[in-house]
Amino acid sequence: MEKLLHGKVCIVTGAAQGIGKAIVERFAADGGIVYAFDRQTGVMEQWAKDCSERYDVRIIPVCCDITDSTGVKNVLMSIHKQEGKIDVLVNNAGVVFNRKIGMIIREETELMFRVNVIAVLELMQLVARFMARNKRGTIVNIASVTAVLGSSGQVAYSATKGAIISLTKSAAKELAPQGIRVNAVAPGIVETERFAELYESSGDKIDERINRIALGRLGTPEDVANACSFLASERASYISGQILGVDGCASI
Ligand SMILES: NC(=O)c1ccc[n+]([C@@H]2O[C@H](COP(=O)([O-])OP(=O)(O)OC[C@H]3O[C@@H](n4cnc5c(N)ncnc54)[C@H](O)[C@@H]3O)[C@@H](O)[C@H]2O)c1
Image (cartoon, rainbow, N blue to C red):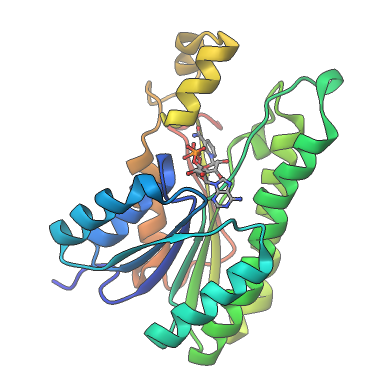
C-alpha cells in the first residue's frame, strides 16, 4: 500500500524539538520529503540524517527565523525551484509566555503575535502562491485547546491561538477554489521539553490537570503528529476549515 505522504514536499516549522520534531518523523515515515525549519538547526543535523536513512526519504534541516519574511521568501523560492512544487505546510513553530493579566509584558505579547500569528499568515500567503500553480496543496496550523477553553495565565498566548482558529477558517474558504485545504490541530497539554520546563517553573499540580482529561493522560507529540499526517494526506481530501482537537477529550 502506498504511504500516506509518498513523494509529497512538506514544510514543517519549529521542527527542532517537541511536536515539530515528531511531525517531521511521522511525515518521513509516511514517505514525505520534509524541509524542517527552525531557528536552531544544529541540534537537528545528526537526527535528520539518521531519520532520513531509517525511512529512506530526504529530511532537510533549514535554519531560518520565520519572522524574517525576506529570508523565508528566499528559502521557499529555492525549495520550489529545487522540487518543482510544495504540497504541505505545517505551521507549528510557536512561542509562549505565561503571565497573569497584571503581569503581561508588551514585548512578550508582540513576539508571540509575530511568531504565532503574523509569520503564519505570511507563510500561508507565500506557500499558497506556489500551491495555487499546481491547483493543490494543504496547510495545517497548530492552534491550542486554550483558544477554545481559556486558561488562567495564558490570556495573551490564547489570543494568538484564537487568531489561528479564525484565520484557518477564513483561509480555507478563500483558498478552496485553488484546490488548497486549510485545517488546524488544537492540542491539549502535550508532554514536550517546553511543557516540562513551564510546569517545573510554575509548580503547577500536574495530577490535577491530568484528572481533568477524560482519557486520563497527557498528549504525546506523536498524537499530534498523527493528526497532522491525516489532515495533510489525501485521506482528508474533503476536509477543510476544521479544527481537530487532539486533547484526550479535555474540551468536553
Ligand atoms: N506543548 C503543548 O502542550 C502545546 C499545547 C498546545 C499547543 N501547542 C503548540 O504546538 C506548537 C509546538 O509546541 P512545542 O511544545 O513542541 O514547542 P517547543 O517550544 O518545544 O518547540 C517550538 C519550536 O519552535 C521553534 N521556534 C520558535 N520560534 C521560532 C521562529 N521565530 N522561527 C523558527 N522557529 C522557531 C523553536 O526553536 C522550537 O524548536 C506551538 O505552536 C505551541 O503553541 C503546544
